[in-house]
Image 1 (cartoon, one colour):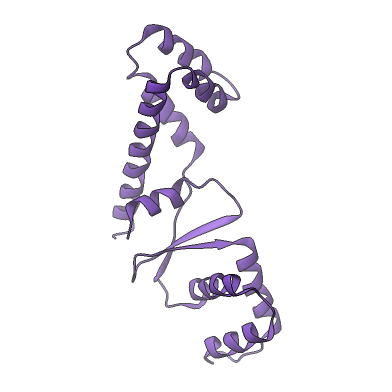
Image 2: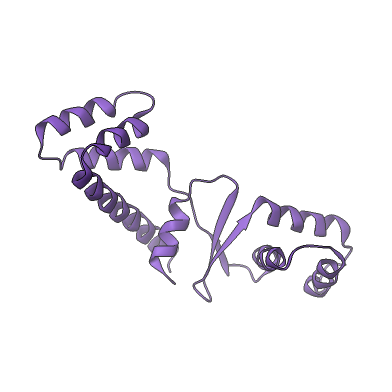
Length: 168
């Protein structure tokens, strides 16, 4: 498992993409709404009895539908997440916006330049704080780079805490 990939999955803010950690292989499986939709379509169209091997029916269903090769792999991943052994795939949570805001506040406390600190404090007040914070740092490239490293470290810490909570 790559911690970098896991942090990327954790910090991906898209509501249209889910990430799952395969605890057997350590791979990160990315699923789109289209992938999940294909599984729903399979479930609606396929008829199988309880206890019957759904993977054989799934492969036949997939063969009968015209999906590009690249999408077939993702649909297979979605099937594995949905129908694989219980506990094999764990959904990677998305980082919460309040975590990002708290990171900006924590970072502000480390800023030595009084003028920049004052600008950040103003930027963090009210709606649109994320955009204003980034705009302020744009004029301070060294601090901006330091922010990126700081933010990544905070995200890594949260991912590692999540892994401990999941007993991985």
